[in-house]
Image (tube, rainbow, N blue to C red; front, side, top):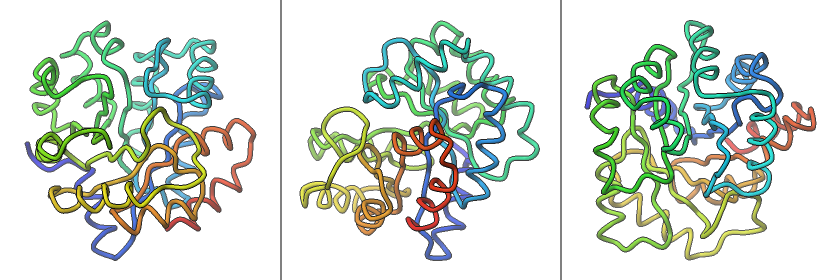
Length: 257
């Protein structure tokens, strides 16, 4: 696969000795009409990219905060087609990568080839599908490759060394290191096991390694980021947007870098 925009954007920051910070937001939480403004705001705060969740009725990897955000988005009538159309309307003005996080069911219902085509038209740079194992990736991988959309893989603490090496080899854009066993959400602290896990992934990955799940403040971001290339922060960002505390989002990003 040719280099994606994620590769270019991340390498520029890393070359300048900057850590990567990727906020997660739920598409349609707060209304689709506000989605592009939120992405622009996060870009202005120094975000390296935005991970954008697609609301789904049965989210197996999401904790309570993101589940509730998804329910609010669904109640607002948010669907995959609407999200892609909204992104397409502002793609010329965006200066950071967009990475969709979606379960496979909405993609399958939408149509796999149509999904890849419409993602490309909307300016989507990467896709994360947490419930699609390596063994089933042929269902979509070729369509994403055709459109130069990075297929970001997740590496779990519970996977063995051989499987982690294979996941690292296949991942595109970056490797998403799941730094907790369980669902998303705030966590008080991370153990030495997690730090060793991240350091191990760095040894086998040729692309940036980002730690996600359970990162909720700048101290944790710096702590985990010291063992990899940066962090993904979801539940805390989702909460702060829902509460209208945009100043705190700005401070969180600034203090994490």
